Image 1 (tube, rainbow over the protein chains, first blue to last red):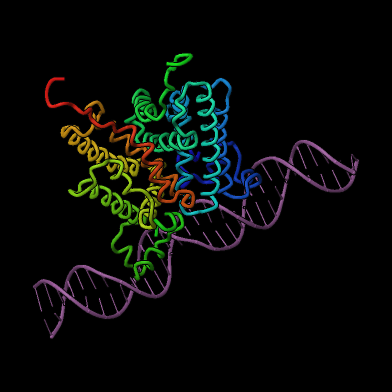
Image 2: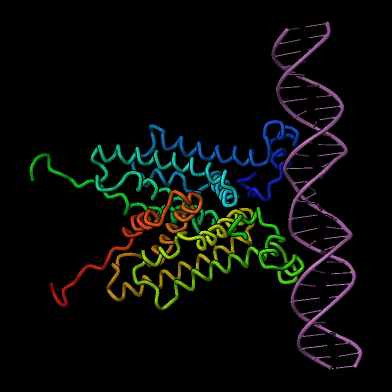
Length: 182
Length: 182
DNA sequence: TTTTTGGCATAATCGTGATTATATAAAAAA
DNA sequence: TTTTTTATATAATCACGATTATGCCAAAAA
């Protein structure tokens, strides 16, 4: 429901109804409304982390990133949850800390991937893994927020093209190097 | 106040007190609370647009962009206003449309600058002005949201370095070209 | 000078919706 | 089988804060 209508338009009753339950059930399982939002956020975050760590994720980082784009209703909902959370975190340091914790995980996950690809000679050793990880996150974030608020303007092919244009230049391939001397 | 505490933690009374006035004054001038938020947002947006159009803005786009970074309390507040607005716009198509209108202006402003610099032979003619404008916006946005929520982690030099790393690769200089033939 | 209007304050209203309390049934434990 | 705990529902409370109503004062207009 939060991903559907935003946290402000979502009542606990709405959550309850969507679960074929009543507010009694919700309050039984959740301390308060914030806890519900946190749970939703965690669900979204775990999705992303799972993807980052999945063994059969795409090798190409741009392709990997494109899996997070708000291309269908599901991922659109996910993004709306994040954005609702941003709105709250802005005025609540505790939530901001939680946000940071997730982002640290994202960054570390990406940095690990980058390091591996550098070791395998696929990505240029010239780029800094952590910084590039942060860059990828910022780019995805900024763009997806935009695409989420302007759904109609950003059909799949345009989203992917924009992502490609923004991300590819940050990910130079390793120089091809003849086996010895040169 | 919205930029200080977020829209959720801001009461009309808070706004009134901050203005040395009472809610009566506020409601006299504003239709409702949303109108207050809209006014705050417009203030922030006009700041940015003014900067984009100012004749003595920096030539270098990265430098220009860095003027928007949340480096001091003032611009931090500005970013918190945007983020509060995001949180609302997520569940309110009318607000989302307003957001889009501002973003279109930002993009067009940037595209105009890019086109001029291409004409002057300073930026590569190979990049698409509109697409690059959108890219710049997304990058600034995504990164500033992060920096806003993680204030402590992002001192000035780190913010600038990160922005440079993300933006510079998108803005290749025009090839140097000998005056004739070659 | 008397009206009228605009700016502002104080105070009342009023809906909303989170939270809390209570009741009941089902399941688990004793 | 009794007792306790857990899951769920219904209903009451309760605070909060946006909105609305009212009144006053000053300034502008008549």
